[in-house]
Length: 408
Ligand SMILES: [Zn+2]
Image (cartoon, rainbow, N blue to C red; front, side, top):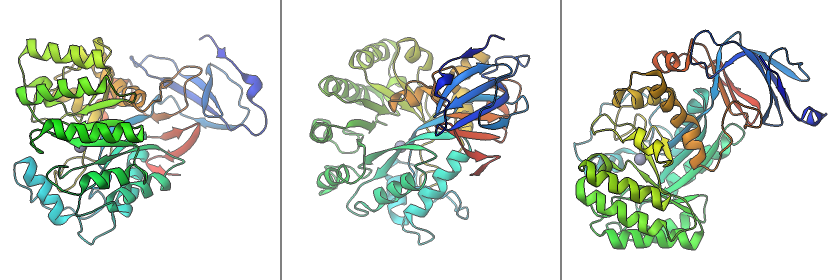
C-alpha cells in the first residue's frame, strides 16, 4: 500500500491531530486491506500503512470508514423521537396531516427545542454531521419552531453543521401574515426560504413562487421548496421553478419532486433537461408510496441529489429513526437495487451528495478531504446498508463527536 502523506509540516503544536489506525476506507470487497488515516486540523493529511501517530490514536480494529452522513431533508421541529409512542391520528391527505400536526404539536410533553436537540443528537450518534432542517413558520406557531431548531443547531454546533429552511407548512396565500413571518425568520436564524405546493396547496403557483423567490433575492438566500404536486400540475411548476432559479444567484432545491416520476418518460426527460440546465438540485426522502426518482438518470446528468429522513416519528408518520443508514437502505430498497455499485451510489448520495448541496465539496476519504467520517463494523459498504450496525466512531472536523452510539 503506497503511503500518501502531505503537509506533515502542519502538524505542529496547536493543531488537533488524530490517527485513525487499522481502518478500511469504503470497502467494496471484504478483502480490502486496512490502512491508517492521519487527520490534522479537520482535514485528512495522510492515508497509508504504518503511519506515525503525532497525537491521539483510535484503533478501528479493521472496521470500515465512510464519509459522515448528510441528512438533506428533515424536520427537527416536528419529531416525537424520544417520547412515548403515540398512535397515528392523521387522515390520508396532505391537508389532514398538516392539521394533525397543528392539533397536536403543543403536546406539553417537551419543548420544540428539547425535541430538536434530542433528535439532532440522536442523528449525530448515527453518523450524520450535516443536516438541512425545515422549520415551520405559520400564524399559529410564529417563529417558535424556528427558535427550537436554532437552539438545536447551537447545542450541537461542535458536532454538526445545520442549515435551516423557513418553511410555510400551512401555505403563504392561505395563511395571511406568513409572508411577513418568513421575512422575519430569514433575519432570525433561517438560512434558506422554503415553499409548499404553490399550486396544489396554495392554489396560485405564480403568486407563491413570486413571494419566495422575492424573499430569496431580498435576503440573498437559497430556496428549498416542497413539491408534492404530481403529474402535469407538478411538471409545470418544476418548469416555473427552473425559470426562476436561472435568475437567482443562490441554489435552488426541489424536495420530493414527485412529478418527475409521475409523468410519461418523454415529459420526464424534458423536466430533467430543464432541471439540469437551471442547475437546480433535487432531494428525496425515498417514500415507498410513489415511484422512485430516476436516481441513475439524475446522477448521469450531474444533477445535485440529496437524501433525507423527512419527519421522524411525528404527527405525519410513525416512520423514521434518526439513522441515515436506515434511510439509505430505504432508498436502495424502494429503487429495487441489488447490485453493489448501485447500493454504493445510494451511500454516496447519503454522504457526499447532500454535502455538496450544502456547499461542502471535499467530502471523501482521500488526502485533502474534510475529516467528517463514520467508522462502523462490517464486510463492505453494501453490507453496512443491509446490516446497519452500531457506529463505532463519528468524527466531525477531525474530532470524535460520538462513540458506540453515544455523543461525546
Ligand atoms: Zn419535508
